[in-house]
Image 1 (cartoon, helix red, strand yellow):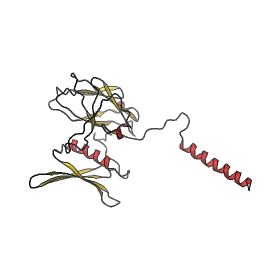
Image 2 (cartoon, helix red, strand yellow):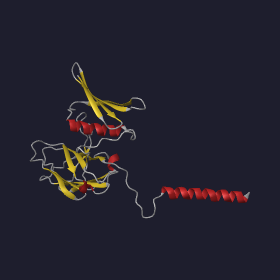
Image 3 (cartoon, helix red, strand yellow):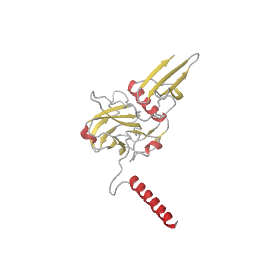
Length: 259
């Protein structure tokens, strides 16, 4: 009986040891971070995964209806402000998309990628109009590995040009020079990601969201074709306007306007 018990304890210890060895990285081996090519600045829950350095305070939330992404973070004036993004492909060109807030102050900045650059310069005072969306095509040589550091060097000539940033997105370019579409069969898109994708669509298509408020977000459809329905409404004197966006599980967006 004692021998059987000893054998059982020995076998159990061996199983535990093998399990621990399988789950732990080998000595000297670093775990690669999971792909995360989007950072929602001003949202601490997302910022914690992107190693922010040098930034100033979170900007107050924008008014309802002005944008889907209502959070942002201020740059430190005349300093470097950086984030890290994590991608799965490194030997391909990318598109870097930035949404910023520009006002009456000198919200000017330069952009560096992995220490290279500036790859982009925005001078608020010289701009024909205040620019909120910045798209930058990056050569594969600038990307390097799967961890990409994007640095904003604030070049304001005044003390209030803090150029708040809403989000930073890095997408691989396809053969036509446009962002690649998400591949079918990927994990279902959660609500937060559906909202982020919708914000990018609104920026690209320049959909006027003034006065609209998000009133409904629901996951609809059967198991094979689920999608998010996101509805913004604007109440007027004797009628209702609404915008309805549909986000599929492969990241495709469509919308309709009713008046």
